Image (cartoon, rainbow, N blue to C red; front, side, top):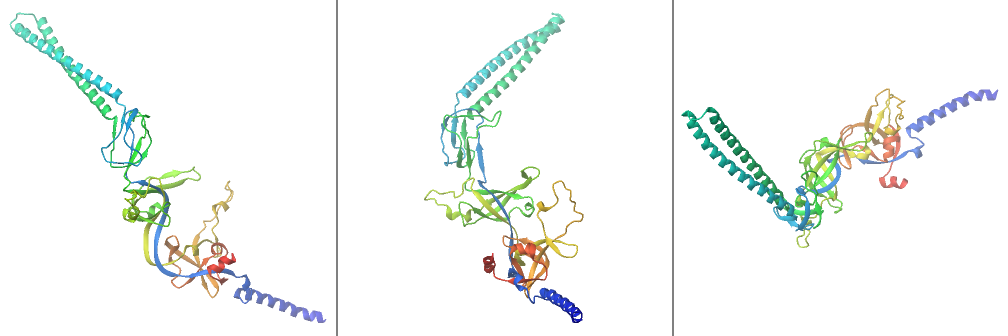
Amino acid sequence: MNQKKILPYAIVLLVVAIIVLVVGKKAGWFGQEYAVSVATETVESKTITELITANGKIQPETEVKISPDVAGEIVELYVEEGDEVKAGDLLCVIKPDMYVSALNRAQATLNSSKARLAQAEAQQIERQMAFKRAKQLYDGGAIPVSEYESAEASYKVAQAEVRAAEFSVKSAEASVSEADEQLRKTKIYAPIAGTISALNVEKGERVVGTSMMVGTEMMVVADLDRMEVEVEVNENDIVKVSKYDTALVEVDAYLQRKFKGIVTEIANSASTTGTATDQVTNFEVKVFLLAESYNDLVDSVSGNLYPFRPGMSATVDIQTETRENVISVPISAVATRVKKEGGGTEEVKDESDSPDENGEEEVTEREEKQEVVFVLKNDVVRKVEVKTGIQDNNSIEILEGISAGDEVVIAPYNAITKSLKDSMLVKKVTEEELFKED
């Protein structure tokens, strides 16, 4: 009997205990040893400059690749790599013997054509006089019409022969001009003032002309006083880049130093790399290096007139937009979550975790993504949906959702993107303590 009386009271006590445990756990009365450790930062206003980062190579703004118009052996080479040249300086000479012979033949042909023209003109005069005499006799009835017509035909033939000889002379003159042009092209002159940045031939080598095909690239003349960086910007970022945007350039050869530049050219057509499945689309952008940012590297005494050399690797940060006094948080504080039907969120999964290759799984509803931050108050985090703006390498602008003075969770990133939930109890620590725990 006593056991039967005690049993209802025991059940009631057990239910009360379970309720207390559940409520106490949610209220944080106990179980705090299981709280997630997080680092936080106070939201403040600052100036943010949006940066588009791209990698590329340094090259001269102006460079000319020199290939010969005629083929032959290089018999004279007057420059070496690194030499300074002026526009019009003689660089090299291709063996001219064959072209001299061609010019002599063309001149002989011209002289022969002129002689034939003189002969034709003399015959024309003779037949013209014969025609005039025949006309007078015919008008006087002294000769028959057949003789008059024969004299007239001979005169017209003589006129045609003169015209043919004149055309022959013009053709011969054109051949002489062409042969003379070919001969003059055996001497290669500098098209611009600059530096021989590349020399690909030696004296005695044979080169191919550009008359029928791509000729031998003998050398490159470049203006090393004006250098630029050619970078490739992804198609997602190219719409943010404008002509004359400022840029900071870091050259691998000069670590811990940044040079100033300005965007001077943006490609209209894209360049693609890779296959159809993993194709990457980029646009070429040229950033001119401002001389005042590296004048101190120029040393005329030691001969270091050009601190940058073609082909040097560089990283460019293009400054597309600057906003002052905007609400911002560290980039690591913002996570992208997917809304659930019940009102909660879950982390955004990688594309590799989605349906199999055969596409057997189908997404019935469009997933709605949202950007969130976690605001800390009284050791409890509150999930807040935010609207973001521009960002730099460290911070991102917040347009809506939080205000200056709020305390947001900035680490660990894995917790922000996956494990943190609304109204979760957390333990606030410094970043140093957090990393020690890891």
